[in-house]
Structures are given as C-alpha cells and as structure tokens.
Image (cartoon, rainbow, N blue to C red; front, side):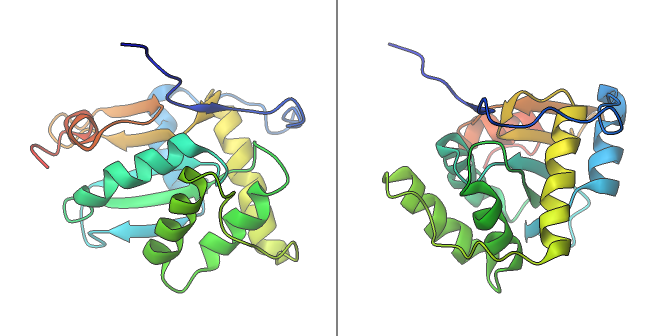
Length: 185
C-alpha cells in the first residue's frame, strides 16, 4: 500500500512573513493564539465547550478530505474553519466567499466537492472587502507563526486531557475523533 501526501504545502509564490509577524508561537500557546487572532466560520455544536480550529486553504484537496471527515463529528464539537491563502490566486477570493456565506456548511460542502472532483472549487469574486482580506492575511501570518508548513492544520484541546494538540494533514473520521478525544464517531 502506498502512502500519499496528507497535506498541502505553501507555493513558492507565498510571501515570507515580515519580521513584524514572524514571532513564533510556542505550541502550548497555539490554542489561545488561534482563538484570539484567527477569523473563520463556525460549524457544528455551536454551544460546545470543545472548539477545534482548522487552518485550511480553499485550494487544498486534503482540506476537503478533512472537511468530509469532520462532518459526522459536528454534533460533538464546534469547528472553526480558518481560511489561509498559500496555494495561489484563487485561495483568497474563495476563502472570502466561504467566510461570508450565509450557509457555510452548504457552501463549504459544495466547494470541497468541486475541489475533490478536480473542478477547481467555487466561483468567487476577486472584489474582497478590506476587512475580510485583512483577516485572511492575518490568518496566513498566524499559520506561519505557528510553524505550520502545510494545511490542513488542526489546533485544539484534547477533550479528556485538556492538552493543546496540533497536527498537519487530513485524517479519517475515526482518526480525527480519536485525535480530539471525542470517542467513537
């Protein structure tokens, strides 16, 4: 059995973080930093005490696999999907469209189906409100400061131990549930 790549890496055209934003975030502080600074859209058990942050690029097929794996767990945790723009010119507009969608679950599901079928994802306007573009830029800089070299990148607290956990790459539903300490899906 061959093992495939489970995450998407930055493209060569991704700008390096500036000295101002390059201050690394220690792993133990990752959860608090993402909770305070990241902007995304929230799905799942909105009142859950268990919040899972997923930094993703809309052009990443592995992020699509993780989205599909997370869907059965939406009743057990609150997921905040945090768009970054590391994989090309479509990333920012698609991330902005997903952040502003009236129904993020439907929009993300349709988008990821399009990505996974090789059709490039949703059509999105290149006219992005300044605050939304700034949020995605901040998310991308935050990803750099977390030391994440690829997406999807998960930041959470393990539900049983309370420890901050991070991981790059897609997981199956069962593996994601185990990683987060949610029990059987």
